[in-house]
Amino acid sequence: MKMKNILYMMVLFIGFSACKKDRVVSYEIEKSFPDPAVRFEDFKKAMATGTDGFQMIIETTAGPIYAGYIKLDGSNNAKFVSDNNVTNATTPKDTKYTLAISQTNSVLSFSKTGNFSLFAAGIAADTSYTYKMSVGDTLKLSGNATGTKLKLVKVTKAVGDDYLAGKMGTVFTSIDNLNKFKKYFKRLTTGGKSYDIMFDIPTKSLIFMYSNGTDWATFKSKIYYTNSGVVLTTPFVDGANKISSIENLAVDVASSTATLTSGGAAATLTNEISPVAVNKTAAATFISKPPQGTYAESFTGFTINGVADGLGTTSLSGFSSLDFVAKVTIGTASYSSLRLYLATGYYGYLPAFTCTTPADGKLFCKLAGYAGTSTNATITAGVISYTTVITQAEGFYVIPTTAITGANTYDLVNARDATAWISFH
Image 1 (tube, rainbow, N blue to C red):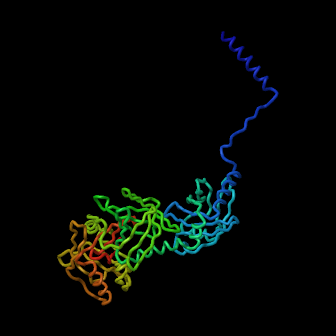
Image 2: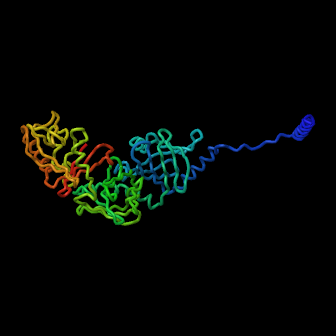
Image 3: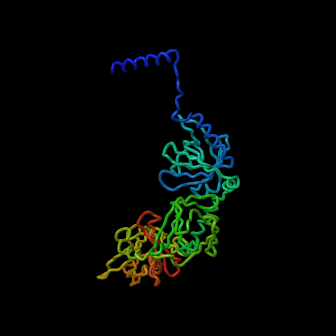
Protein backbone atom coordinates (compact mmCIF):
# COMPACT_ATOMS: atom_id res chain seq x y z
CA MET A 1 0.00 0.00 0.00
CA LYS A 2 2.76 2.38 0.89
CA MET A 3 4.61 1.59 -2.38
CA LYS A 4 1.50 2.54 -4.41
CA ASN A 5 1.29 5.92 -2.66
CA ILE A 6 4.91 6.66 -3.36
CA LEU A 7 4.54 5.85 -7.07
CA TYR A 8 1.44 8.02 -7.26
CA MET A 9 3.24 11.05 -5.76
CA MET A 10 6.17 10.63 -8.17
CA VAL A 11 3.83 10.72 -11.17
CA LEU A 12 2.19 13.92 -9.90
CA PHE A 13 5.57 15.59 -9.33
CA ILE A 14 6.85 14.69 -12.84
CA GLY A 15 3.64 15.93 -14.43
CA PHE A 16 3.67 19.20 -12.49
CA SER A 17 7.32 19.81 -13.37
CA ALA A 18 6.60 19.27 -17.08
CA CYS A 19 3.91 21.94 -17.03
CA LYS A 20 6.43 24.56 -15.79
CA LYS A 21 9.34 23.37 -17.91
CA ASP A 22 9.00 25.91 -20.71
CA ARG A 23 8.52 29.09 -18.64
CA VAL A 24 9.71 30.82 -15.47
CA VAL A 25 7.04 32.48 -13.32
CA SER A 26 8.20 35.66 -11.50
CA TYR A 27 6.49 37.42 -8.63
CA GLU A 28 6.87 41.11 -7.68
CA ILE A 29 8.63 41.56 -4.36
CA GLU A 30 6.94 44.08 -2.05
CA LYS A 31 9.42 46.68 -0.77
CA SER A 32 9.86 46.92 2.97
CA PHE A 33 10.68 50.65 2.77
CA PRO A 34 9.39 53.37 0.44
CA ASP A 35 11.58 54.55 -2.40
CA PRO A 36 13.77 57.40 -1.01
CA ALA A 37 13.02 59.52 -4.08
CA VAL A 38 9.27 59.10 -3.61
CA ARG A 39 9.48 59.94 0.08
CA PHE A 40 11.61 62.99 -0.70
CA GLU A 41 8.97 64.23 -3.15
CA ASP A 42 6.35 63.83 -0.43
CA PHE A 43 8.56 65.80 1.94
CA LYS A 44 9.06 68.62 -0.53
CA LYS A 45 5.33 68.80 -1.20
CA ALA A 46 4.59 68.93 2.53
CA MET A 47 7.13 71.72 3.02
CA ALA A 48 5.74 73.61 0.03
CA THR A 49 2.26 73.70 1.57
CA GLY A 50 3.57 76.06 4.27
CA THR A 51 3.40 79.07 1.98
CA ASP A 52 2.74 81.38 4.94
CA GLY A 53 5.39 79.77 7.10
CA PHE A 54 5.47 77.43 10.05
CA GLN A 55 5.40 77.72 13.78
CA MET A 56 8.46 75.77 14.94
CA ILE A 57 8.66 73.91 18.24
CA ILE A 58 12.08 72.59 19.23
CA GLU A 59 12.57 70.05 21.99
CA THR A 60 16.20 69.39 22.84
CA THR A 61 17.33 66.28 24.69
CA ALA A 62 17.85 68.38 27.82
CA GLY A 63 16.57 71.73 28.98
CA PRO A 64 13.68 74.00 27.99
CA ILE A 65 11.46 73.75 24.91
CA TYR A 66 11.97 76.52 22.36
CA ALA A 67 9.64 77.83 19.74
CA GLY A 68 9.25 80.49 17.08
CA TYR A 69 8.37 80.92 13.43
CA ILE A 70 10.14 80.20 10.17
CA LYS A 71 9.25 81.02 6.58
CA LEU A 72 11.08 79.24 3.75
CA ASP A 73 10.93 80.86 0.31
CA GLY A 74 11.47 77.70 -1.75
CA SER A 75 14.84 78.99 -2.97
CA ASN A 76 16.99 78.05 0.02
CA ASN A 77 16.40 81.33 1.89
CA ALA A 78 14.44 81.63 5.12
CA LYS A 79 13.49 84.12 7.83
CA PHE A 80 12.88 83.08 11.42
CA VAL A 81 12.23 84.36 14.92
CA SER A 82 12.87 82.36 18.10
CA ASP A 83 11.93 82.60 21.76
CA ASN A 84 15.34 82.07 23.34
CA ASN A 85 15.54 85.80 24.11
CA VAL A 86 13.56 88.99 23.53
CA THR A 87 15.86 90.22 20.73
CA ASN A 88 15.50 87.05 18.67
CA ALA A 89 11.76 87.04 19.36
CA THR A 90 11.40 90.58 18.07
CA THR A 91 13.75 90.85 15.10
CA PRO A 92 13.59 88.31 12.22
CA LYS A 93 16.88 86.82 11.07
CA ASP A 94 17.87 85.45 7.67
CA THR A 95 19.32 82.00 7.17
CA LYS A 96 20.07 79.48 4.43
CA TYR A 97 18.57 76.00 4.20
CA THR A 98 18.52 72.97 1.88
CA LEU A 99 16.18 70.05 1.29
CA ALA A 100 18.02 66.92 0.16
CA ILE A 101 18.33 63.14 0.32
CA SER A 102 21.07 61.99 2.66
CA GLN A 103 21.65 58.25 2.30
CA THR A 104 17.97 57.20 2.22
CA ASN A 105 16.64 60.04 4.40
CA SER A 106 14.78 63.19 3.43
CA VAL A 107 16.64 65.95 5.25
CA LEU A 108 16.17 69.62 6.12
CA SER A 109 19.55 71.24 6.82
CA PHE A 110 20.52 74.76 7.83
CA SER A 111 23.78 76.43 6.89
CA LYS A 112 26.47 75.71 9.46
CA THR A 113 27.62 79.33 9.35
CA GLY A 114 24.20 81.01 9.32
CA ASN A 115 21.96 82.61 11.93
CA PHE A 116 19.97 79.44 12.56
CA SER A 117 23.17 77.59 13.45
CA LEU A 118 24.08 80.32 15.94
CA PHE A 119 20.64 80.00 17.49
CA ALA A 120 20.90 76.19 17.55
CA ALA A 121 24.34 76.28 19.18
CA GLY A 122 22.97 78.49 21.94
CA ILE A 123 20.24 76.02 22.87
CA ALA A 124 22.15 72.78 22.12
CA ALA A 125 19.91 71.87 19.17
CA ASP A 126 20.66 70.20 15.85
CA THR A 127 21.03 71.97 12.49
CA SER A 128 20.14 68.97 10.31
CA TYR A 129 16.82 67.11 10.58
CA THR A 130 15.37 63.95 9.07
CA TYR A 131 11.74 64.02 8.02
CA LYS A 132 9.65 61.48 9.95
CA MET A 133 5.99 62.10 9.15
CA SER A 134 3.19 64.56 8.46
CA VAL A 135 0.02 64.63 10.55
CA GLY A 136 -2.53 67.18 9.41
CA ASP A 137 -0.81 70.58 9.38
CA THR A 138 2.19 69.31 11.35
CA LEU A 139 5.50 67.96 10.06
CA LYS A 140 7.66 66.01 12.50
CA LEU A 141 11.44 65.81 12.13
CA SER A 142 14.29 64.41 14.20
CA GLY A 143 17.78 65.87 14.65
CA ASN A 144 20.59 63.90 13.04
CA ALA A 145 23.24 64.60 15.68
CA THR A 146 21.60 64.74 19.11
CA GLY A 147 18.00 63.73 18.40
CA THR A 148 16.44 67.18 18.77
CA LYS A 149 12.72 66.98 18.01
CA LEU A 150 11.44 69.58 15.55
CA LYS A 151 7.78 70.19 14.81
CA LEU A 152 6.71 72.50 12.01
CA VAL A 153 3.07 73.58 12.16
CA LYS A 154 1.52 75.44 9.24
CA VAL A 155 0.12 78.87 10.13
CA THR A 156 -2.04 81.45 8.41
CA LYS A 157 -0.68 84.58 6.77
CA ALA A 158 -2.01 86.74 9.60
CA VAL A 159 -0.19 84.67 12.21
CA GLY A 160 3.01 84.65 10.17
CA ASP A 161 2.84 88.42 9.73
CA ASP A 162 2.44 88.82 13.50
CA TYR A 163 5.59 86.80 14.13
CA LEU A 164 7.61 88.77 11.57
CA ALA A 165 6.29 92.03 13.05
CA GLY A 166 7.80 91.10 16.43
CA LYS A 167 4.59 90.25 18.29
CA MET A 168 6.32 87.41 20.14
CA GLY A 169 8.70 90.01 21.58
CA THR A 170 5.78 91.91 23.11
CA VAL A 171 4.90 88.76 25.08
CA PHE A 172 8.40 88.85 26.60
CA THR A 173 7.84 92.49 27.55
CA SER A 174 4.46 91.76 29.15
CA ILE A 175 5.87 88.97 31.30
CA ASP A 176 8.84 91.12 32.27
CA ASN A 177 6.38 93.83 33.36
CA LEU A 178 4.74 91.37 35.75
CA ASN A 179 8.06 91.20 37.57
CA LYS A 180 7.84 94.96 38.14
CA PHE A 181 4.82 94.56 40.42
CA LYS A 182 5.64 95.86 43.89
CA LYS A 183 4.19 92.91 45.77
CA TYR A 184 5.38 89.31 45.64
CA PHE A 185 2.10 87.48 45.06
CA LYS A 186 0.67 87.58 41.54
CA ARG A 187 -2.88 86.24 41.74
CA LEU A 188 -4.49 84.62 38.70
CA THR A 189 -8.27 84.35 38.94
CA THR A 190 -10.12 82.23 36.40
CA GLY A 191 -13.12 79.92 36.48
CA GLY A 192 -14.00 81.05 39.99
CA LYS A 193 -10.66 79.93 41.44
CA SER A 194 -7.44 81.73 42.34
CA TYR A 195 -3.79 80.75 42.01
CA ASP A 196 -0.50 82.48 42.77
CA ILE A 197 1.66 82.20 39.66
CA MET A 198 5.30 82.81 38.94
CA PHE A 199 7.14 82.93 35.61
CA ASP A 200 10.69 81.62 35.85
CA ILE A 201 12.36 83.08 32.77
CA PRO A 202 15.74 81.21 32.89
CA THR A 203 14.07 77.78 32.92
CA LYS A 204 11.09 78.85 30.76
CA SER A 205 8.64 77.58 33.34
CA LEU A 206 5.32 78.65 34.84
CA ILE A 207 4.62 77.73 38.46
CA PHE A 208 1.22 77.61 40.16
CA MET A 209 0.86 77.78 43.96
CA TYR A 210 -2.61 77.02 45.28
CA SER A 211 -4.79 75.15 47.75
CA ASN A 212 -5.71 71.62 46.72
CA GLY A 213 -8.56 71.65 49.21
CA THR A 214 -6.58 70.63 52.25
CA ASP A 215 -2.95 71.66 51.71
CA TRP A 216 -0.66 74.10 49.94
CA ALA A 217 0.32 72.68 46.56
CA THR A 218 2.48 73.55 43.57
CA PHE A 219 2.45 72.73 39.87
CA LYS A 220 5.14 73.45 37.30
CA SER A 221 5.05 73.30 33.52
CA LYS A 222 7.55 74.15 30.85
CA ILE A 223 6.35 76.89 28.53
CA TYR A 224 7.14 78.21 25.08
CA TYR A 225 6.21 81.52 23.51
CA THR A 226 3.89 82.26 20.59
CA ASN A 227 2.86 85.45 18.80
CA SER A 228 0.05 85.93 21.34
CA GLY A 229 1.20 84.38 24.62
CA VAL A 230 2.69 81.24 26.11
CA VAL A 231 1.75 77.56 25.84
CA LEU A 232 2.10 75.15 28.76
CA THR A 233 3.62 71.87 27.60
CA THR A 234 1.73 70.19 30.45
CA PRO A 235 -1.68 71.80 31.10
CA PHE A 236 -2.56 72.74 34.67
CA VAL A 237 -5.78 71.00 35.72
CA ASP A 238 -7.71 71.86 38.89
CA GLY A 239 -11.21 70.43 38.84
CA ALA A 240 -13.07 72.04 35.94
CA ASN A 241 -10.23 74.51 35.36
CA LYS A 242 -7.76 73.55 32.66
CA ILE A 243 -5.06 76.07 31.79
CA SER A 244 -3.06 75.11 28.71
CA SER A 245 -2.08 78.61 27.59
CA ILE A 246 -1.99 82.24 28.64
CA GLU A 247 -2.76 84.66 25.84
CA ASN A 248 -3.43 88.34 25.19
CA LEU A 249 -1.61 89.35 28.37
CA ALA A 250 -2.04 93.09 28.95
CA VAL A 251 -0.14 94.43 31.97
CA ASP A 252 -0.69 97.75 33.75
CA VAL A 253 2.39 98.23 35.92
CA ALA A 254 1.03 101.40 37.56
CA SER A 255 -1.99 99.60 39.00
CA SER A 256 -0.24 96.23 39.32
CA THR A 257 -3.01 94.47 37.42
CA ALA A 258 -3.29 92.51 34.19
CA THR A 259 -5.90 90.95 31.95
CA LEU A 260 -5.52 87.84 29.82
CA THR A 261 -7.36 84.95 28.23
CA SER A 262 -6.93 81.24 28.82
CA GLY A 263 -8.76 78.70 26.73
CA GLY A 264 -10.81 81.54 25.31
CA ALA A 265 -12.03 82.59 28.77
CA ALA A 266 -11.21 85.97 30.30
CA ALA A 267 -9.04 86.03 33.43
CA THR A 268 -7.36 88.60 35.65
CA LEU A 269 -4.06 89.04 37.47
CA THR A 270 -3.82 91.11 40.63
CA ASN A 271 -1.00 91.86 43.06
CA GLU A 272 -1.74 90.65 46.60
CA ILE A 273 -0.20 91.00 50.06
CA SER A 274 -0.77 87.41 51.18
CA PRO A 275 -0.62 83.97 49.52
CA VAL A 276 -3.69 82.11 48.30
CA ALA A 277 -2.54 79.24 50.53
CA VAL A 278 0.14 78.90 53.21
CA ASN A 279 2.58 76.04 53.61
CA LYS A 280 2.21 75.50 57.35
CA THR A 281 5.44 73.51 57.81
CA ALA A 282 7.89 75.41 55.60
CA ALA A 283 9.00 77.97 58.21
CA ALA A 284 9.83 75.32 60.81
CA THR A 285 11.72 73.27 58.23
CA PHE A 286 13.68 76.32 57.08
CA ILE A 287 14.85 76.97 60.64
CA SER A 288 15.54 73.37 61.65
CA LYS A 289 17.04 72.20 58.35
CA PRO A 290 18.49 75.17 56.43
CA PRO A 291 19.49 74.44 52.81
CA GLN A 292 23.21 74.52 53.61
CA GLY A 293 22.93 72.42 56.76
CA THR A 294 23.37 75.13 59.38
CA TYR A 295 22.65 78.19 57.28
CA ALA A 296 21.00 79.42 54.08
CA GLU A 297 22.62 81.90 51.72
CA SER A 298 21.32 84.66 49.48
CA PHE A 299 23.32 86.21 46.66
CA THR A 300 20.76 88.86 45.74
CA GLY A 301 19.63 90.53 48.96
CA PHE A 302 16.11 91.86 49.49
CA THR A 303 13.85 92.88 46.64
CA ILE A 304 12.00 95.98 47.81
CA ASN A 305 8.87 97.22 46.02
CA GLY A 306 9.83 95.22 42.94
CA VAL A 307 13.38 96.59 42.84
CA ALA A 308 16.07 93.91 43.01
CA ASP A 309 18.53 94.44 45.89
CA GLY A 310 16.52 97.45 46.99
CA LEU A 311 18.68 97.91 50.10
CA GLY A 312 21.96 97.88 48.16
CA THR A 313 23.34 94.95 50.15
CA THR A 314 25.17 93.33 47.24
CA SER A 315 26.94 96.65 46.57
CA LEU A 316 28.62 96.68 49.97
CA SER A 317 32.40 96.39 49.71
CA GLY A 318 33.54 92.76 49.50
CA PHE A 319 30.00 91.32 49.44
CA SER A 320 29.88 87.57 48.92
CA SER A 321 26.55 86.45 50.38
CA LEU A 322 23.92 87.22 52.99
CA ASP A 323 23.52 84.18 55.24
CA PHE A 324 20.61 83.25 57.47
CA VAL A 325 22.40 81.36 60.26
CA ALA A 326 20.02 79.20 62.25
CA LYS A 327 22.13 79.15 65.41
CA VAL A 328 24.89 81.41 66.67
CA THR A 329 26.17 81.40 70.23
CA ILE A 330 26.71 84.79 71.83
CA GLY A 331 27.98 84.51 75.37
CA THR A 332 26.01 81.64 76.80
CA ALA A 333 22.87 82.21 74.75
CA SER A 334 21.87 80.91 71.32
CA TYR A 335 20.28 83.08 68.66
CA SER A 336 19.66 83.18 64.94
CA SER A 337 21.27 85.82 62.76
CA LEU A 338 21.37 87.29 59.27
CA ARG A 339 25.10 87.61 58.68
CA LEU A 340 27.02 89.40 55.98
CA TYR A 341 29.72 87.23 54.42
CA LEU A 342 32.48 89.25 52.78
CA ALA A 343 35.50 88.29 50.72
CA THR A 344 37.50 88.06 53.96
CA GLY A 345 34.87 86.12 55.92
CA TYR A 346 31.93 87.10 58.11
CA TYR A 347 31.64 90.78 58.99
CA GLY A 348 32.23 91.19 62.73
CA TYR A 349 29.04 93.13 63.50
CA LEU A 350 25.87 91.02 63.48
CA PRO A 351 22.25 91.05 64.60
CA ALA A 352 20.99 88.50 67.12
CA PHE A 353 17.33 87.51 67.11
CA THR A 354 15.08 84.78 68.38
CA CYS A 355 12.89 82.95 65.86
CA THR A 356 9.48 81.38 66.34
CA THR A 357 7.31 79.42 63.89
CA PRO A 358 3.71 79.32 65.18
CA ALA A 359 0.90 77.22 63.72
CA ASP A 360 -0.06 79.84 61.13
CA GLY A 361 3.10 78.94 59.19
CA LYS A 362 4.89 82.29 59.45
CA LEU A 363 8.44 82.94 60.59
CA PHE A 364 8.92 85.60 63.29
CA CYS A 365 12.37 87.00 64.10
CA LYS A 366 12.52 89.23 67.21
CA LEU A 367 15.63 91.37 67.55
CA ALA A 368 17.53 90.86 70.81
CA GLY A 369 20.34 93.24 69.88
CA TYR A 370 23.63 93.46 67.99
CA ALA A 371 26.92 91.78 68.79
CA GLY A 372 30.50 92.14 67.64
CA THR A 373 32.49 95.14 66.50
CA SER A 374 31.65 97.66 63.80
CA THR A 375 34.72 98.33 61.67
CA ASN A 376 33.10 100.04 58.67
CA ALA A 377 30.31 102.59 59.05
CA THR A 378 28.84 101.95 55.59
CA ILE A 379 28.76 98.18 56.01
CA THR A 380 27.33 98.49 59.52
CA ALA A 381 24.56 100.72 58.16
CA GLY A 382 23.82 98.01 55.61
CA VAL A 383 23.57 95.39 58.36
CA ILE A 384 21.12 97.54 60.32
CA SER A 385 19.10 98.18 57.15
CA TYR A 386 18.41 94.53 56.32
CA THR A 387 17.97 93.64 60.01
CA THR A 388 15.15 96.18 60.24
CA VAL A 389 13.36 94.30 57.47
CA ILE A 390 13.87 90.70 58.65
CA THR A 391 12.66 91.59 62.17
CA GLN A 392 9.38 93.21 61.12
CA ALA A 393 6.74 92.44 63.74
CA GLU A 394 4.31 90.89 61.24
CA GLY A 395 6.77 88.14 60.36
CA PHE A 396 7.47 86.42 57.04
CA TYR A 397 5.79 83.86 54.83
CA VAL A 398 8.20 81.06 53.91
CA ILE A 399 7.68 79.84 50.34
CA PRO A 400 9.45 76.63 49.24
CA THR A 401 10.69 77.22 45.68
CA THR A 402 12.04 73.75 44.97
CA ALA A 403 9.47 73.41 42.16
CA ILE A 404 11.23 76.30 40.42
CA THR A 405 14.89 75.66 41.14
CA GLY A 406 14.99 71.90 41.54
CA ALA A 407 17.04 72.46 44.70
CA ASN A 408 16.36 73.05 48.40
CA THR A 409 15.45 76.74 48.17
CA TYR A 410 13.07 79.21 49.80
CA ASP A 411 11.67 82.70 49.36
CA LEU A 412 10.94 84.71 52.51
CA VAL A 413 8.19 87.30 51.95
CA ASN A 414 7.25 89.95 54.51
CA ALA A 415 3.71 89.49 55.84
CA ARG A 416 3.17 93.22 56.40
CA ASP A 417 2.54 94.00 52.73
CA ALA A 418 4.55 91.51 50.59
CA THR A 419 6.78 94.33 49.31
CA ALA A 420 10.02 92.84 50.67
CA TRP A 421 11.31 89.38 49.83
CA ILE A 422 14.57 87.47 49.66
CA SER A 423 15.61 84.16 48.08
CA PHE A 424 17.71 81.66 50.03
CA HIS A 425 19.66 78.67 48.75
